Length: 119
Image (cartoon, rainbow, N blue to C red; front, side, top):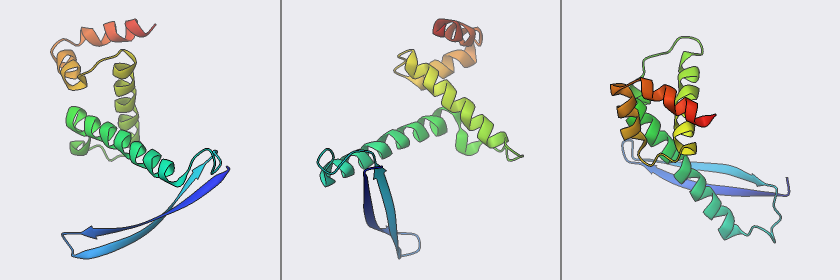
């Protein structure tokens, strides 16, 4: 750890009319000369773009928000399997994950072919 940045943000919640004040800390192994303030915020925005993209794929393609599994570690296990599926598709260079998932739903044997393509 070479640098810590404090990020303060206010978020207005429309439904309640209240403003939430939030302080978060960002930690990096790069020095201030290597990574300036504007670059830190660019990295933070990029992180959330990636995170939002993954969550969108998992929710829209795999229906994660509609999942009703709540017993013990079931939800975490299913989320991990969804992450694995997304990672496999990305490793294989699949551009449209939803289309690929729909294809596998129609013909499950394609899943075995994808797994075979990894080895």
